[in-house]
Length: 214
Image (cartoon, rainbow, N blue to C red):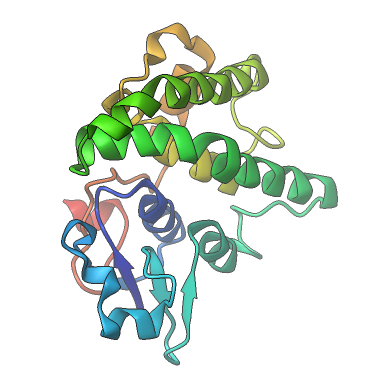
């Protein structure tokens, strides 16, 4: 069985958990408290020398890191990964956008304000710039989503999962989503997808998906 090392408040980890849920893949969740340095121990660093979650441990003991790489590994050749070559590239485009132009600002502010990392005086000085860049990413998303239900090819897939993870909790970092009707409509559509689970979902051993949450 797959073993996912994760921290439930992590949007990056949620991408993997949401992908697993949509595909109905059973896995065992091992929670790692990143607030107390659990991923910096010698034992964990053997699994992922970068000392971060999520880390997916495969059946043969191989460990795979980086959320978007993990979701690709899980979703390739499934309904979450497009068949069209251009749509594959567009999916990667949005996944790279998420990690470069979205997550470093929206996720970081949420981590400081909500998850427990705290807003130190040094961090407080950085808040305006992170807000500016976070809103810039949301502006790009809003513009793209006008008249669309999904990010790529009008079909729910990995690009939606990648961007949903931190966008749906952006208000926990102080971002106002009320000004983005297209984003809010898209968020509702993602949450209504069969197989959807919330970020707080903790599957029983060997189970995943909505049935396990009942």
